[in-house]
Length: 333
Image (cartoon, rainbow, N blue to C red; front, top):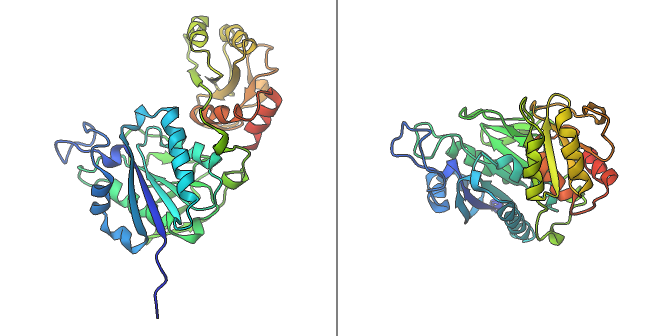
């Protein structure tokens, strides 16, 4: 009996720790990211050919802390073009962990395809003892090549866990169990295959209103992190940048210091969208949580963390500038 053809998975390499090397195998911190190319990565994990027919492409070779919105958008357009090909069944993106969640979330909202797209990374460089990159990569290919992964949006596979791009975040600086979701993983990788236990409730990929083909640039957006000494002098930075949106990572329920109400409100009146998030790491931000009386026209993030709120604000501004509509977008996604 003829065996069915293996699915075709394209691997897009972005660099990062998963492609990093150090002078010593015992050095897991003093390494250079993105020094290993995609061909060497594929050669290091030959077992992936049991899961899929692999094509490798070096899209970037960098430390993900240097990721720009321009490169992120270019990656989205490249992934979109690959997904449109009938001979491509899934995509794995190897990526540095520092900004992996932001890349995953933008792709989750703009890729109008049900084909699996999986991001993987590593917490230890490829040269380290017990490097986690190879097994994460193998697991990522296993997930991307499995029909059960279709229609679930963009996924992040780390440490044998499968997370939705909507929820996952990096929660530790060095541990291999650095990526977690506040509501738990979607599933796990067991014996080289994905096992799913829950789905994604919020719209994504084929269900969103964001048209990647119409987005040439992302509006400029930044994050202000609240702390006890923060005062109105930060407004000089706000005005100098002329940001289209500012995410304020506030205290508790998105609380904004009374000292910051006036400068942020002035920025709003100058045309900047003000988005209230929380620095706590999880939880819902409600409209009544701001200090002071000025809340009309400010956006509350629902439960999105500041980095993902910044991404969503950028995308929302490609659709509308109406605060009520932007709030609807945050409540929807």
